[in-house]
Length: 382
Image 1 (cartoon, rainbow, N blue to C red):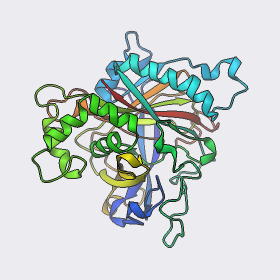
Image 2 (cartoon, rainbow, N blue to C red):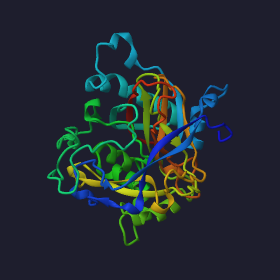
Image 3 (cartoon, rainbow, N blue to C red):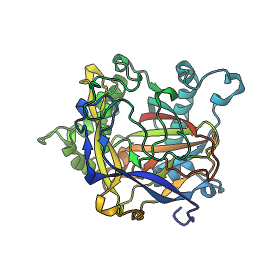
Image 4 (cartoon, rainbow, N blue to C red):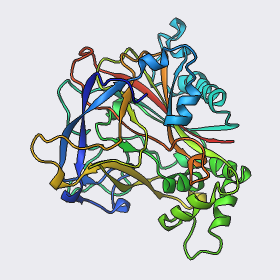
């Protein structure tokens, strides 16, 4: 795909890493709330349209998912059936009865996973044309804020939620817009944390599938726990050493609610050479199941730059990082993006790692209509 010519440029927000953050202790922040990043710069990158690839005879979405960490699937949803026109996309019974089963079936057929657990869904809408800064805070989080650590995410975190196995839905009214920051929602560490602490049914399946036993076995004689950052390297090295270990993965299934004109979702496969772009991990406080140990910290990663590399109007060297998108993506074209895949761990791993993703500002190249989308996040076991 790298042979395609770049057609347009998209402007991302990049965190200036050495400017630092405020409110760094995730335990003292509200749920799902980022630290306060002190400085960002806007930088443009070429975007490569993969529509010619997905339109070519013989295109197989599963192959692209394996080689690049994302795939584009053609799928008609009952969400848009005229008989459902009177229903609201944020209506949770509608999602549970109609859309979630579709997503499970779609991923089962595409990936071969035996068990699919939906954890979250989001409805997002673009902000006014021309706004390129990061999304505004979800809750008050400036220095000196009186917002307590137990505060919720605009009313979407219920303290009783994780006592059940019900997916969480974040409605359009929560103000979650397209993410201008190139990022990873999961890391190897946060994947291990989520399957153990987030929900009882997921933890049980992780044990029955042999995942927790395999990871804990690798760390059994080590001086640090499986859920620590120190365990990353040894688990990655050994998990698939003698053939693939028990496989688990996390995915995002992203669908526009109309043809995309602005803020396309762009994906960049992970490559060793990121040029001047630097990975910056940070933690989010997540509500966990009380019986599994309660709240935990989930690691997330941004792509940022050092201050010395962001001279006025200077382009940023992105190394081998290339951004792909689907021009004028329709509601029947679904993006499936890896968030994590144990099968990609170590030298014995198979397939691509989770790619970077984000929604840059492309202006009104394709039109001015605001983008609306629905995303469903899942954890899968084989």
